[in-house]
Image (cartoon, rainbow, N blue to C red; front, side, top):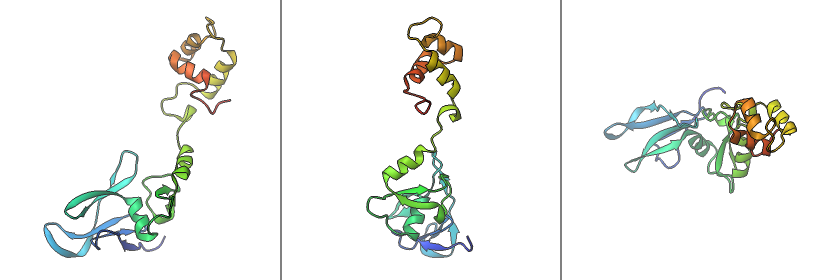
Amino acid sequence: MGEETWRPIPGFDGWYDVSDAGRVRSWKVRGRPDRATEPTVLRDQAHKNGMRYVSLRREGRYVKCLVHRLVMLAFIGEPPEGESLVIHLNKDPGDNRLPNLAYASQEVVSAFHLETIARGESHLNAKLTESAVRFSRSVYVPGDDRVGCSALAEDFGVRPAAMHLALTGKTWKHVE
C-alpha cells in the first residue's frame, strides 16, 4: 500500500479521522473547544482478544470504538443487511488495514474462527496426543483394570474425567 489515506469517522462531526492503515487521529485540543491545526495520532489499546480499540469523545462522553469497525465505516460505509460483523481476513485481530477487513454474517464469522481454534495436540494445555486417543479408543474396555478408563488415564497422565471425555468423543472429536 502506498501513501496512507485518511477519512473522517462518521458520527464524530469531523473531530476524528481513521486511515486505511488502521490508525486513528484526533483534531481535538484538550481543554479547548477549537480545532487543532495539526491532528494527533491516537494510541490504540489491545483488548484481551487482540482487537484494537480507541476511546473517542462524543457528546461529552468517551466511547470505546473498535478500530476495525471505524475503518470499515469510514471507507466502505454501513454494513450490508445481514453482514453486521467485521472479519480479519488474515485472522490477525490486530491488523486493521483496509485490505484485511470485510463485512460478514455471524455464520461466516463463526465458521471462519472455527478454523483458528487450537484443538487437539496444538492446544496449549493438551496432555494427550491424537495417537494416544486413537490407541485408547481401540483398546478401551469399560470397567477393565488394565484398559478401563481409570487405567488408561493413569497410563497417559490425565484425570479419569478427561480420559472419559476423550473416549466418548466429547473431546477430541476430530480424531477418528
